[in-house]
Length: 601
Image (tube, rainbow, N blue to C red; front, side, top):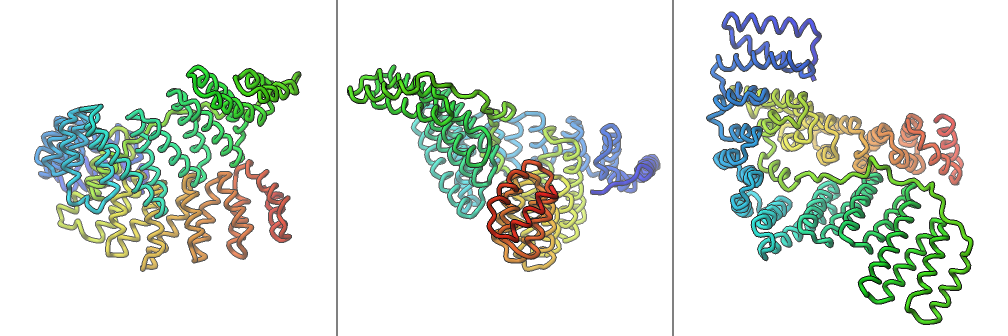
């Protein structure tokens, strides 16, 4: 993004002030616009420029643009006066002030039914929210949008449940929502869009939490964990296991909790994380509690026996032979057949004098044991759909929202003013305008910029597509790769080059899965080389493991790229993994390469 030296900023500020004092408002506006493009300066200086710019716009008769600036500054009275003629911007202002009913009315006036329904929900006017969602379910634009239809049905069910918690209508609506979400999730998985499938399962999980139905909770967690494990996001998998088991224990679902502990232990062992023994010990203790509950509830003695045997198995796995002996002693006292009781008593005596387990098994770190805050995807994705990738509308949703850092809000304001300038010149559809907007959207470095860039990528002119794909290199989100993959097969060579540039810039931990898929699917050596380069910059053990696989499978340039990436990997945890592969490698050439990398790292 643009940066000026201090002398240039000082000169531009002086020029703006002199032009304003002389009544040359158009000249002052240009100088202030240059100044506010410097989004890195301190707040008091930047806000002073904005006040000057708003004054310029008032003198130039551009009240709407002055309103944009006042919205950023939170000068609500001035913003209301300036934005009175625009219901959409009035709605944004009402949202910033948390006047949700006023916002809903303005959104309806602006023909934004999804926004209006969300605002009614936040105003706790659930009857109006329900009516809004039910009307939206019949919206013509949603007929071929199964994901958004599923979200609408979820919101209908949620609104009915708030109005009539135990009503059959609420249950039917939520069951229909779950059916739709599961179908859409399957479609996303088949298409390789795992992050979208994950969103669907998170909503199923919320549905279960809201309804108290443990079956839905379990369904949501099991599928979320499966998707995360498929993307090799180890610590996120264990965070979800932790959350799942906590909820199971809170609800007294001891059998489920013990099983979840066992599955977490198996997963930790599979991915070489040191928490398996602690999970196994927790599983053993929970099976014991499960047996106690079965006995207290008068359930069949075979169920008590099976729970105790499961506990014994887990105690044995962690070397807690005191726990094993106690388990068999309890089994010997159950009302079982005499031969069984005698056998259990005999086994228990074999463990007399046995030692307990060492207590040095590490637990999953406390700082990762956090209750997940689930984003309101059921609202956010519908709002995104309704804005249809309009840069001005998307930026206006960010300018006044203090949840965004000031730097991002400033860049959003620049996007709004660029779009407004183009409207004034009737140049909204011009290639030069769209290219500039694409560059500015990339500088937002915000998830909200993805939808407008995806829309720009669908433009017929390759210059616009090229600019949109280049901008993606600043957007560190897995969703960015959906457009990058399309761009790699674009008919225009410049767009394909932009996709390669984006790949080399998108190196962050969650990018490993998409990068590995591009590497596997690509046939062009340059594309595969770019993904190897990007994976080498991720600096995680998981990235190192993928690169070792590339080294062992490839030859020539790609093998050399993997070798260089492994040597530059700044993570000591990769060393034992390299050593393990070196020791078992049968191919002499690959073994020599691994040995050379080990010596270098």
